[in-house]
Length: 193
Image (cartoon, rainbow, N blue to C red; front, side):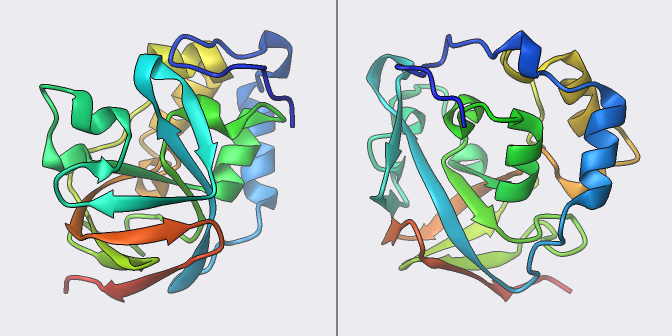
């Protein structure tokens, strides 16, 4: 994986590593399905002061602060519907194509099926010692996403025929404080009927 010396909110991606739509589609078709009920945390990233991305081994999820030390708590316009973001590790690796996963700006990278069918709004997850709930806020790509991974990657995660897969990931809110670390289990404990 290519890792710049410093990844922050202004870091652009390597254009030579941006994948075209046909490569993205082909690689998605070859991706091994993620587990549906029990997965694990593969990577934790905190957006520190100045937009710097810190890859951390452990952290604390808080009802009041999201991932403690993350940018979310410093944002005066924060919304509890967008407290924490989660992305499927396989999809992130596919899109990043060798670039640092911290470029995404998400906090939790997991091995778990994040599709709408498997994780409808209101689903609850035990994540380490914390409890999180999937919110209805759509997690979309933006101009920064495009500059990091290419315009085809942005179109790919936004395609109406793929939106149900939540390729860009999910927004969650913290329902119960708790510590989290790489390797911790992520368990779906409730799905609304």
